[in-house]
Image (cartoon, rainbow, N blue to C red; front, side):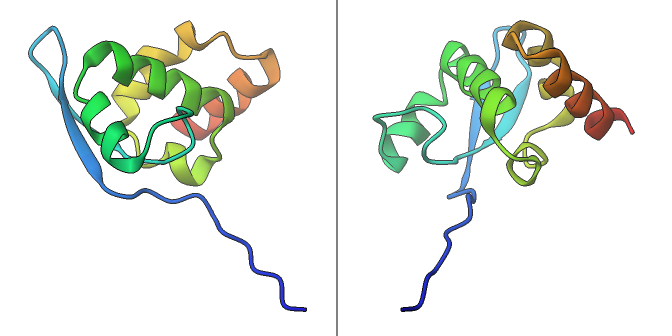
Length: 98
């Protein structure tokens, strides 16, 4: 029996206008926020509150291949609010800043 593995990947990009007027591009990765289809996720990510929650969830559980698709300044903004375990926080800080 052949076994195939599906890797997490982006299904597109959504622009989100933040409250400070900045516009960020977020990757659409199904599964980070549960119970949303790709279309529903694309629509939801235009809301800055949802975009922040989505990014913090990505910081908590997404692999680096997904996180590198996010704008690094946006990850830096959200990382402290994400309530990460110290080991994950240290690993992400290393990946983001070398």
